[in-house]
Length: 281
Image (cartoon, rainbow, N blue to C red; front, side, top):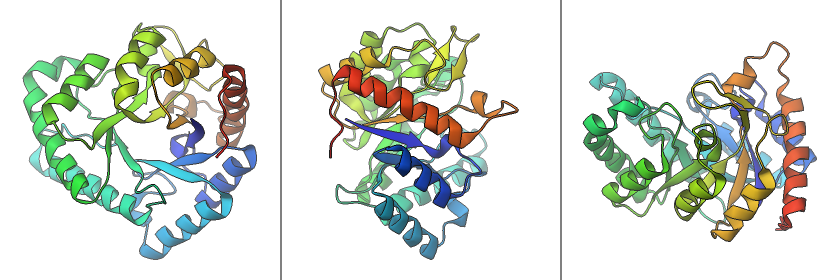
């Protein structure tokens, strides 16, 4: 396993600064966020900028295991859904442009909607996921769906059912265990179900139970990273463990995105060492 960081927690940090800082800290890879409002927003990524960022990744020795393209698949307005689908397809095209030696990065996205829409809108979600995944398949790209507290896919069981119903080999999971933690799932329960389907991950820290929970910077909460890493290893996961700093944390008046990354690295690198997991390339 390797240690990564998502620029989800760095919305306004220029990509040059973000990549330099993460590499200096010792991260092995990065997940770049390309949704509106970010310094690497998809609409700003000209061909020349895409090439420049690819060169920066190589310069700093950082892998790109995933791209955060989070966009709802469950919008009811047809025109809004069409725009969302077009943006996700453009994000898939971006993954092709940023492909590395192991192929294109995975595209991470949440599904949107609400948990109680599962039974009534499940077929629509399957249909829309299938359409997007079929496009991704023609480009050699993996679609990594992220179960999320408060969304239509909020449990491990729903995620597995979606994968089975879509029935395409490039539909995998962006496994953010924090969403299951705050719902009361044990590490073993969620890891044993999700690790076999995971192509990428997120970790945060947290306290409390949904809906009265708080997501935190790694090291601030109660999550047992060592037990988690050992469980992931035991269940055969060999990819990236990528930290993500939530919007909850970013709303703090004194939030410092670079310091958050520094604290995160110290916490997770120590957990890798304590778990006895070798990160060497």
